[in-house]
Length: 247
Image 1 (tube, one colour):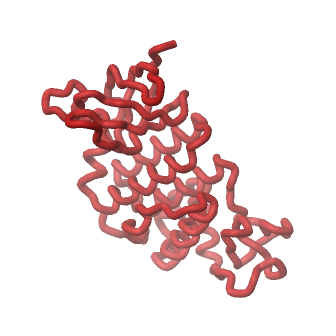
Image 2: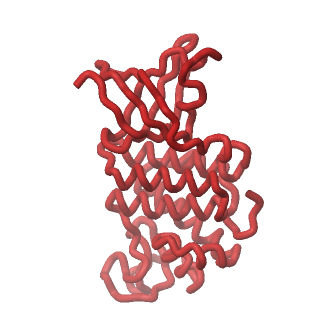
């Protein structure tokens, strides 16, 4: 059909001409979509702020040859304003949409869409440290893409844990026999934090010590960027996820 409707979350935008924008969106049913929003940069635009990054919208699109065209847009989730006024939320949200953009190059599942929307909603609410929300999102998004890290048994030989070495290149926690020299060593609280971030046990995540949060964040960033095969540039600007950090 030449037109179709879907729910989308806006990942990024680029200027086109004097008044238009190219909008890259992750949709619920049609995967990643790139479309032109005509006249959106004019003050009289009927779209207004509905097609800004981190916004969730119901859109009507016309199928084009290379780029679709946005014909209608109605706001479903207005998260951008609450995210943009807090530096840590803003940088974490940018890292999340950048990762989502990379992970969904070929095919998108509804679970990936819902995970991203849920992460942005949590950032806007500010109920947890922004870096912890980002870390949990990255772990779960990687798992949905088939790259779930092994956190309870050896990623190489499947020996039951607990283990204290984490190697991104090998797929997560590894036993003493499989761990290469120089592997990152984790204390038990950090291992538990990784497991809690994956399972969404926010009581344990919020109670974690700053040292464990910093260690987990570094490992998760390394793991995600290893499998994505290039860096997530926004991570350079993300602040520590230590509990009690300013939001």
